[in-house]
Length: 364
Ligand code: CA
Image (tube, rainbow, N blue to C red):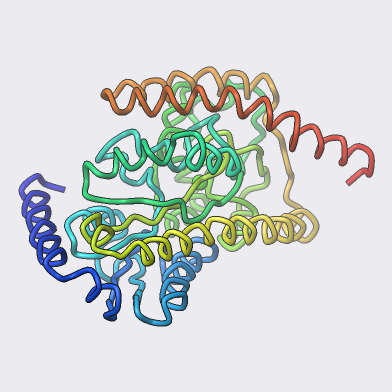
């Protein structure tokens, strides 16, 4: 967005904020407020769009309609990727989206969605809630007049759909793959031509051969897009998005105009979605994987450890570069990497070792 438009928008936000703060707190606490929520998702898009709708409906229900949240799907009020600006400048009151979509504003936003070889959903929650992540996030978002919360997670994503087997890192050379963001940068280090395409353009591009491979989300969302009709090999794990967190961001002036009770209500409504969305993804990914493998004969493949080692090495370089953007990026990066070292040891001892042993013992 151009600077002039941004500055004009920011000024509007300040005026709106000033107006809000002239109302007495009790008047705001007792009076009905209509709130506009914008999203980066198409209307009722499974998991993400429906999750945003649940946050809006939950705030309205929990406040008995006093905080009346109306959801605007992608493009209804503003284009999807302008959701952040709309909230920053007060055009909308809140957004539901993925923080890494705002990496053009600040690279450090990546850490609050997912980075290659980064946190799983559980680990991200642990860092944000108890590892200093929320405080760093507040510091980052405050620069844009936004206050954000975790409000959803897709869980570990899949590595993607490929029209050939990927046996060595050489197989990435020249591969045209849809993989946005930092994951795409990692693959470019291996000679792949990584591109960004919006959801609706992926299937036709894969079908026509304009791209050779794509990542999207996981079995549930991928089944709905029908990638199995044109590609055979479904790879795991999704090194690039090991637990993508979704967020609700609120205009900071609006947030600060809320009573402590309403602030707690909004926070609780977002936190609830953080659990509900992950539960839905886990439940539906399990069902959909079964359909893909047994009904559509999809060939499940795992990236070899040799490939993962190289992807890991390149990922560390790409993520470290994000951490060098400025002082705040460095602070966030250092906190993230330090936390990952400690929590990953625990994750291995707990979830990884247990589920591996369970699978072997029961052959499931
Ligand atoms: Ca993805």
